[in-house]
Length: 202
Image 1 (spheres, rainbow, N blue to C red):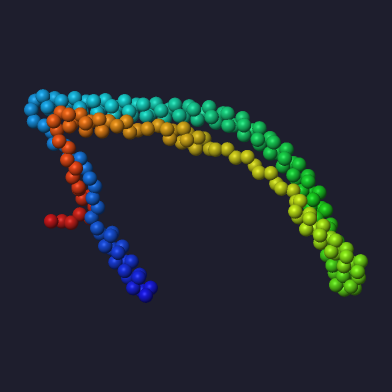
Image 2 (cartoon, rainbow, N blue to C red; image 1 turned 120 degrees about the horizontal axis):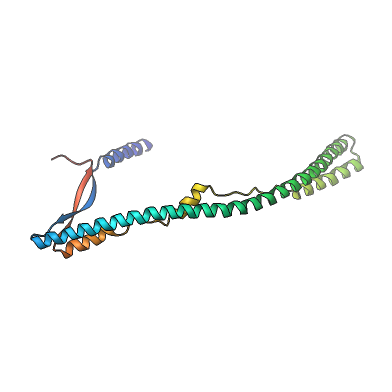
């Protein structure tokens, strides 16, 4: 059954891989007459002007975003430095407490190992009771083990720039306005399905 499924999957992959791919494009049929052609020229001029202004505004937006990112980085650096200084103080306190905790834990573990062995060998009630007490102390010690503080992080400058630049738009609707202008001039726009890959040869 698995063999047939594998063969079927290969067949589907080959079939879909060779299937033609299409896209839909606008076909512009201009109107006739001198006035209509002049009207279309005006549409083209307006579209080009719109595109240039759009690109200019887009680039200006990118530059402004970069400058904002620099200001944001300066503010974040100050805040990060404060957090990092707090982190260092907490880390030093953690290391001191961890040092004491580890020494106490190791001592209790050595004592527990000793009394456990004595309990097994000699069946001494004192050794067995002491081993049980130390086992409880060790378990409780693990529950109150000091937790290492988490180091602060900060965004990279590139990430800040990307966050600011994502609001910059490049599409100003110039082509849509041109289409409306083209139709108002008497032109016709037709949608045509065009093969772009794996096209069958006639």
